[in-house]
Amino acid sequence: MALLKFLNLSLLVLYPIAWTAPLMRAGLLPLFSLSEISVLTGLQSLWASDIFLALVVTVFALFAPYLKTIGLALVQFGWLSDRSLTALHVLGKLAMADVFLIALYITLTKGIGLGRIETAWGLYLFTACILASLLISWRTQNLLAKSASAD
Image 1 (cartoon, rainbow, N blue to C red):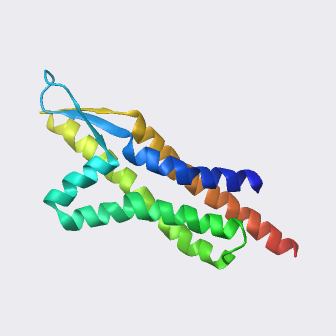
Image 2 (tube, rainbow, N blue to C red):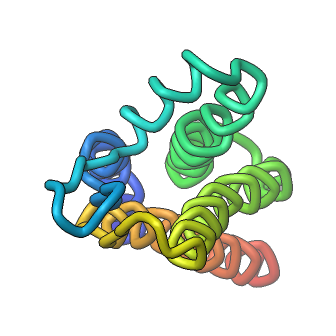
């Protein structure tokens, strides 16, 4: 359980790195240089053009995974009831939605054929953070269920 606690707490550092890391490089034509796009730069553009979508993506990309990580840490340290794991599981599913959105944007842009998109290391880091969070919460839930049945 100590390793799970450490891994979960490390996500509190890795998420902000993933938010600022380049998710993709995009350009209009193959001859021009590519602009790097991160979660935060994407959100900045959204806030300027579509406030509702920006709010939704901010909740999915920033708040949901971070709140889930904090909530899971509180459960792991015994400061929050095990019953809250169901709500944390829902937060984890919401956090996964933004990875799907990014993949959809890349697919759509590549399908148009006008621009050029390359995935960058931040996309893999961000996806790894989300998947690690899901694995850590699943493993924590299993360990807590085993210890509850042993009592």
